[in-house]
Image (tube, rainbow over all chains, first blue to last red; front, side, top):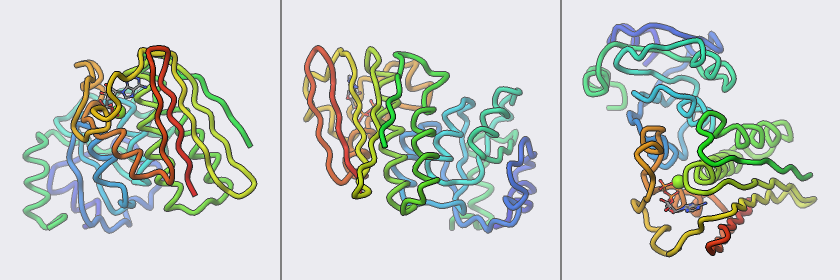
Length: 117
Length: 135
Ligand SMILES: Nc1ncnc2c1ncn2[C@@H]1O[C@H](COP(=O)(O)OP(=O)(O)O)[C@@H](O)[C@H]1O
Ligand SMILES: [Mg+2]
């Protein structure tokens, strides 16, 4: 599933795009968690076709995404994304998107439309 | 090649930066991406442990002539009382603050062990010493 479609399904917005090619990635699956250790364990063999969905609004989401070779992070519940967050995304070369939906609704909507099904 | 990083207790802001630097260094050396991923995961989890569980310490990164990567994490306490228990997936003494920070699932040590080629941990009240190699 391409990002344009993902963003449409969850009324998502682009916050920071590190590389325009993120829009060409065909996302195969997503992982939703606020515990980064959880992602570091489950996504050991993941690549950029995995979308990290989280409600955690700190630098560790970018460190985690970059450790796992991911390309994009989706922040749920319309977390107020400040300059500091954008700087973090930039430092880790991660693209950041945001949605107002909760974790539950975000995952439900994307799964229903076939992401990771 | 050898690099040493200092990691401070409760420095949530900078946590992960040493691991990022190590990953960047190895990436430039064009190391096998699969191995690099395992190194990055283990290094990051161990760095976080220094921040959230220890009194602070150092990370030593070494790359020898045979291409073997060695990572050592040495802190100054308070140590791990029961290593076997600490290694159990799901066991965690992480504070509420650490959990809000995104860590404390109790999966770190187990994940590191699975990522590394060799894994050795020694601990006393004076500090924990973790050594991992990757090839
Ligand atoms: N460097 C350390 N110093 C003291 N205790 C540690 C250290 N690393 C790990 N521990 C102990 O081992 C437990 C398990 O660690 P880990 O598997 O990484 O899980 P987590 O960090 O999520 O708690 C920790 O909760 C802590 O009690
Ligand atoms: Mg840990």
